[in-house]
Every structure is written in structure tokens, then in C-alpha cells.
Image (cartoon, rainbow, N blue to C red; front, side, top):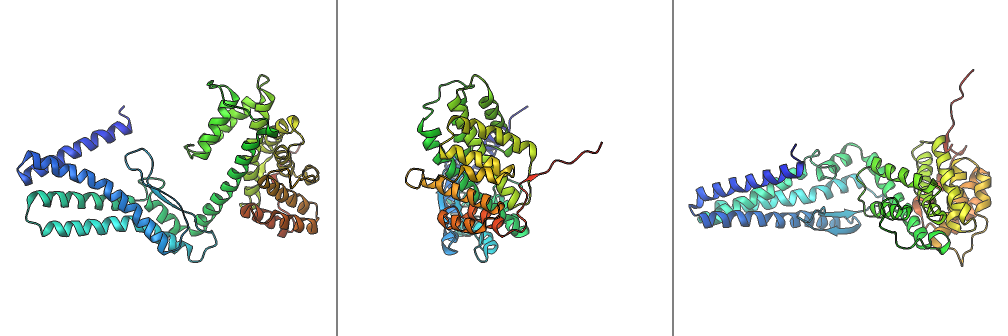
Length: 395
């Protein structure tokens, strides 16, 4: 069976040969035909640059926050303009629709200009070059508007913001939340279980330190292909952490990373999405958190992991007791604010709303999405269940 990449290469070669044959028919010169097709191929790079410029200009005009611009055709990386507006921004669906239309529309307008210019030229070579460039620009614009071409195509994003703006806002809000989770994990990685760093991983695929480093790199760089791949990697890490041969420090580091990554998301799903976590997953989180807490019970990152497990297990008094001693001058500010917010949640479940309000102010809004989770719990009456109770089986 021929791979999709090979099929793409073969199709590209056939298209180039057909283009050369057409150019030869028009120009009646082999050199001119090859040169014309060469200029047409180069125009693809220009159209890609123009496409991203179209997105960028619209983003600036509509005051959408641009967080990154990457234009890297033919390198394997996706050329893209990233925007990250506030989920509650006014007229957001319309602004996002216009943003995603910006690139394809500039390609189509450029193609129309090039096609018009070709109609007014009398040189066969120039006409072929302009028509070829117009065709490339037009195809690039049209293909990007087809929703099914790619999961991240402009057409797919347009359809999402037009047909389901509420869901699109929720996805945007979840993206902000994941940034806060990743920020917490980076702070933990810098401290690495009580300032005892794991060091450089050896080149052994089964070494837990190497597996943890690879897991962090894939997640931070977006190289995980799907949620299923991410969960499979996490399960492999968890299995390594539980092995008797694993160094306790490495097991503790794995336990912290997995507990914080999944624990914070379980908390978000239960409160924001109304999807309490299954009890078996709470048990697994508790086991992983215990690996970290057993090694360094006084380190804030380990206490945060263990308090998350207690919260998900609906034991707020245990979570609260772990977060009473927060040292402003010693503990990292990011972890300190996360600890304040988790303790806020514990106080809410215990009915200590005055203490919860004090802790919310102490956190300072530095983690706005996690703060919203705490505020939602504070406002709920009764507080939402964080895990799904197992069904009682009659006898």
C-alpha cells in the first residue's frame, strides 16, 4: 500500500509535468515552459505569505490579540497566525469569522488581480506565469475554505464559529485554562520535587526520567497527536512510577505532573462542564499524588498534588490542612497562588465563605480561569459534586 505522503509526492510531480506540457503548448519553448512553471511554483510561497498577512491585518484591524505568527512553508511546520481573544469579548463570533476569512479572501483577491493582468498582456511567457500564479492563489484560497480538508483549516474554524459560537467560546476558555495548568507544571519542573532535580535523562526508552522528559516535551510543544495518545503516554508513565525498580524521586516527579495535569482538568470538568470524574479515576489520582507526597511531604508542589486528590475525593478538610502553611517569601509565587485557590475551594466546601473570600483576594486574580472555577463553587448552592458516586447494586 502506498503511503499518503508518497501519493502526495507522486501527485505533485504529475501536476508539475502537466503544467510544463501546458506551458510548452502556449510558449512553444522548452526553456520558457520550464521557467514559467518554476515561477508558478515560487508563487506558492508568496501566496502563503500573503495568506498569513491577510489574517494578521484583519486581526490588527479587529483588535484581536495576536500571540504568535509563524510562516514556515515547506518545512513541515504549519504556517499560522495565532490569536487569543478574551472568551467574553464583545461580538466575538463575528470578529473570529472575519479573522478566518482574511487569509483566503486575500488569496482570492490576489488571484483575481493576477488573472486580470494576464488578460492584458501580449507576451505568451508572461501570460502563462500570471495565469499559473493566479491559479495557485485561487486554489489556496478555496482549499482553505473547505471544512473537511484539515482539522485546523480556516473553513473548519469558520464553520465552528458560525454554527456553534457557544461551544467555540468554551473551547477558547479551555485553552486559557490549559495555559494555567501548563504554567503550574513548568513551575513544578523548575523546582523538581523539593529542589532535587532529576538531571539529564539517560538514553533508555524505559527509563522513567526519560519518559517524563519526553512527555513534557510532547505536551508543551503540541506534538501529541490526539487525546488518546496523550492518555496512553500518561498511563505508561503511571505504570513506570509504580514499578518497584523506579527511583523514588523519579516516581514522585511523575506523580506530581500527572496529578496536577489531570487533577486540575477533572476539577474543571466537574465544575464548568458538569461532568464529575469517575471514582476509579479519583483513586488513581490519589495513588499518584501519594507517590509525590510520600517522598517530600513538606514541599508545596507535593502538597498541592495531594490536596487536589483530597478535593476530588470530596475530603475538603484534608485538602485544607495541607494548604494552611503557605510561605510567601519561600514558595514560588505561581504555586502559592494555585495553593490559595485550591484552599479557597476547600473552604467553600466546608462552608467557610468568609475565609474563601480572603483567600480569593490573596490569590490576586493571577490565575483567572482557575479563579473562575473557585468563584463558581463559591456561588453554587449546594456546591457541585466533584466525582460521580458509584451506583449501589441491590442484593
